Image 1 (tube, rainbow over the protein chains, first blue to last red):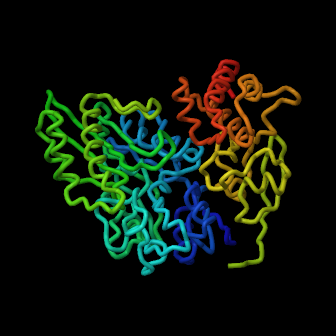
Image 2 (image 1 turned 90 degrees about the vertical axis):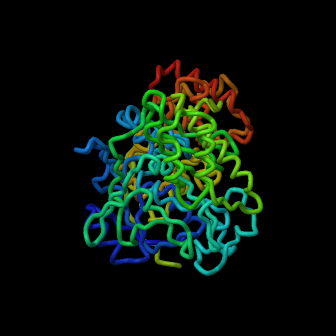
Image 3 (image 1 turned 180 degrees about the vertical axis):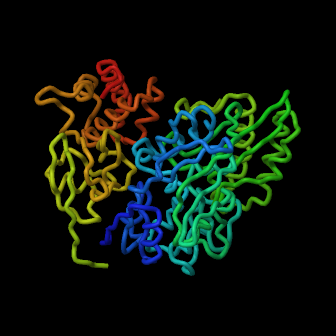
Length: 338
Length: 163
């Protein structure tokens, strides 16, 4: 690993001042992704700013009936938090579908949002990668691209975002609270991560001198009708080929409100408002779900090795919406798909 | 990039013994244990958080010590496999691993033991399926998994949910 300086921030204002003063510095919290990338020399910060002592560890109900989750809450603590279990089980289920318990114990909520892609060319410093080294080219296009994106790709990058939790947060219309030199702002989840376009090195719309302080969930948690289904190459502890977070509100057998987001298929959690609109007012059925899936996957452009993902995503969407509407969410320990 | 090693003094309580240690910012907790303190029970497998061989308990929670920077754990309590037994009396997990033949080559075992101790303390796994899922961060290339699950079940009944 490269050598670097280490400093500790004691307040959010401190942290922002420190990062603004040193563009080569990086914040570190759980470190599960950053330390790994530093070992591969994909990330080479000159200084780490330890933010784990900042007072961002609370989970509090908001006056609007939502939930404000501190950026430093460990993934495990959030998954098992009584309010998450009772009102936002989709979030807990998605968290427990990702990584291992050791990593979830270390990883923070804010860090989960800022995970880099697991594209093997991004990790392999001897191959061209526009995300790692802008302008060098994309080795995945025309390379081994079985795990790569099928939606929202560009000529520059076909990487996916690896998070499970973010797929649930996207479906639930979460927002991200950030603080920078000019104060605080709130970013809607759909605007937090970006598509690669011609700047794949930029994963998110967080400015380099901003820090995530919290994630806010709105009041509606869809606790009665939800499911998170993750399809991967092994049954546990693997990144998604395709995952789906679905949340429905049923009234008298009709879908009053519907949300779903798809993971493993794009540079960000993939959510299509028109696909959700196609569910509202309908009676749940395979045909209705299939139509929504078709709309969500419109414009899919697979690569040489991942054409299977289009049909896999279609079926996973239908299955997850079925689980949600039946009130039989996918278990994350019993791997049989309900 | 080379830089003169900046060393920082930190205090860690390791297996109930307070220790003052000089570490560089880039020294992992794993390397601190193995290379600085001679506690080689904790194993380096992948060194990238993928295998779980380096699992230790930090303030009672299981973590991958390979991805933990020691400097960030100043003041913490660390339990390694060397700290599980009570003198010559094996920890119920260690005894259960022997009783159930829950290892072959043994390289992943210290990580399995510490991870299982963390799992029991968490109290979330009740069924074999839940044990398997919540132990999935510990890879055993000898595939002793069925016996590991049986050993953990035995230790759970001995410990009554407390590791």
